[in-house]
Length: 167
Image (tube, rainbow, N blue to C red; front, side, top):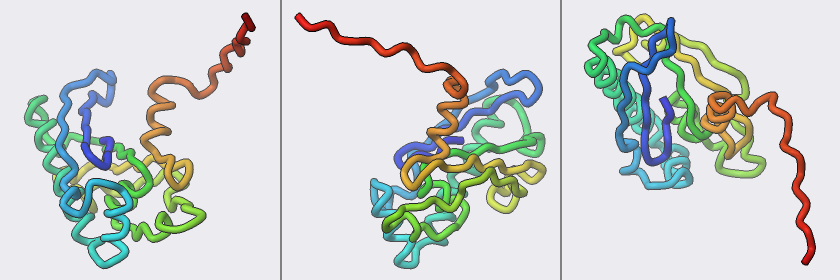
């Protein structure tokens, strides 16, 4: 799952083969609290953290159901749910106060991989482990880490620098 500020995108993969079984997405249901990250951070700091968390976990849980229905699978068969997003979206999903992202130095809370019981956040995934990918910096999140891993950029050598020729 990629919990974006605007859209939540989800992919169901076969755990043994890696084959994509289904995809689904939805508009992030937190948008009623603002279209941008800053508005949602402010709403959470002002006392709406629990509601923001409920909105996103309910939305993600519904996406799990949709994915499984499309693939003819049961949510009970899911072994791992992997979550990425920018630091604010991840903290709101987990119910972690994002006030650390509201002022300098904007340090993220999730700097290490987090493994927890998925059922604590997603009731449909009663048997799964929730894997939360760590963030890099205050506004460089696990979605970027996921992109780097998916494209296999990590470990690649830099391409040679090109020099412009003067005319």
